Image (cartoon, helix red, strand yellow):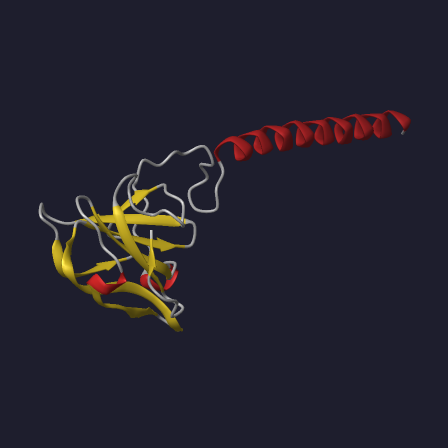
Amino acid sequence: MSTGRGQLSTTITAALALSIVLSALLAGVVTQTGTTTDFNLNENSNDEVPTPEPGDQRAISFAALCVVDGDVDESDVVDVTFSNPKPGEPGEFLTASFNTTVPVDYVVLKYSTTAEEFVFASGGVTSGSVTVGEGTEVTRPANDPCRPGDAGVKKEVDGGVFEEV
């Protein structure tokens, strides 16, 4: 009878060892190639990041109207309005529209930690609209959003006065 118990212990030990080995192998496979959708954690995607939905976009902090040659000040700006409210967020806007008496060469919108530049045709424009996410991202300080050497005026969304930059 003791031989039968010895064989049973050996069989249980072998089964336990086999289950540990299989668990380790399976864990290694899942670690290397497992995700919640297709079991491939190591998959790299070259897909472009989609443009965020309007509800996910950041609201405008200010719009700066900039001119390359010449000067612009608050007396040259007829109107700057902010519109296209962020869904569910009254008072937070995604579009800035302007009317001026001098041609504007480009506009810089500042939102969150991002600034975007919107360049107009040679000679500039005296009216237009720009929307978050449709410009070219630029890195400039908030207190000097126009390109070095260019003149500009900015308008804060929160109702602040025009400020020369």
